[in-house]
Length: 134
Image 1 (tube, rainbow, N blue to C red):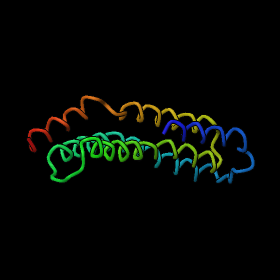
Image 2: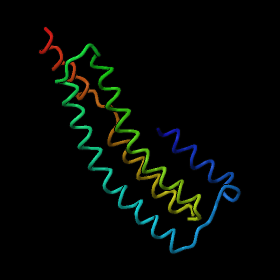
Image 3: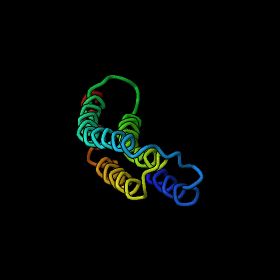
């Protein structure tokens, strides 16, 4: 996920002038505001979804291992947070400056850090599955 963030920024720095399709300032302000609201809402929603997925990983029947179950949780939560950094790239393409790109990129980095894989969560899934299937 961090590699994608780096790629967005490098593309914007190397080919920024060629790929931009500027909009009017008023339209960009509206879109940027909507993206900020979505980004603010995605952080607690992703946290809630992660909590739910972790509990489902511990209780759902099936043959999948704890590692496979946890991998799905990590992929889903990381992808949801990656959307926040995409907002900066989109705004850059629409004519905003590097400041907006960097703000959304930093929000994405913070989200990726907050939702990184944690050994304790995986261990809780392993323990719960061991109790269910002795």
